[in-house]
Length: 436
Image (cartoon, rainbow, N blue to C red; front, side, top):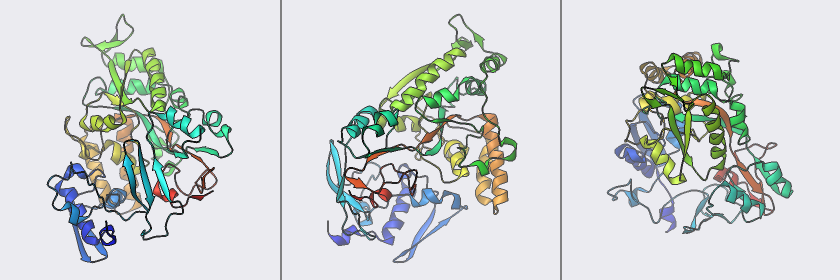
């Protein structure tokens, strides 16, 4: 590839965003439809039908492709580019099923990386990653380590682990499938679980605010009526909730209605041992209130396509990314305007629960039109009320952005004392690393 091809232009940006509109399956960031143009060689203008400032992170996160290489591709959704063009700090050096080598891009338009290359190696699960880190076979990872202080950081002064709180997670139901389509079942589950035990299974903190918003990060966004209002464990009330909705406990100890037992599965990748630990706790807790939970493990590559199509009863491990603001938190997880019927994949993996609610749909349409912080907060307050009363998904714990590293070979990682960025493997940190 010559240097001229390694430069992306404004025309490439325009072409890419037009491609996203023409092929919605490529629009994984959820970029809204609109017009895009390039009035000058170094300028791109976006014009959207509706106010879209609140979607800025999604809009600017779309990867850009080279027009001269992609304009002749008949089906971009299945195209595998053998010679991708990029302008990033690193470029592909070697690739095989066993590893990916990224080498420093000496033509990078900003200060170049101080390290020559990064090699990514796949591992079976979190445990094998931990073993590789402990044995010095890997230097940087973004996976959960059980009892990190004992199993990892105590092994060497060079070993570090950091998991700053980044978001909220819990039981994500498929609202198109019974029994989780029944609000009484979801409320019973929320009442019946011990969030401290679920969180402790993977060293996390239990979710506290009934709004689902991760605290203390979004404390200022919690509406006045819900400030200080937390989840309450009440197994007796959980069972009363089911019985009031017409459920009766059978001889097997589980509730049933219309001849069907209250039973569902939780699907997640077997490689994610931290999720397995939490779900195993839930199996026992839900049994105590007469609900049967089954574990359904799958692969890392399979889970997103399944949840996107609605081929699951429930899952955990979503939302998987931190959100820049409170509205984004709800927009990603419960915006009814992002509903897709079962069998049709949600391209941006938003609202995989398939939550439908007319009031909520209107609120999400109103929010971008608000012109003051006060007006936006008033709409957000109403969205929080919908969340609390209709419980589209069940918050259980605040998750951490897991990261582990060794300073034996390289230094410059962020940590609790210098939190300049998240420490999971990413290019921002890679650009600050330097040989030890």
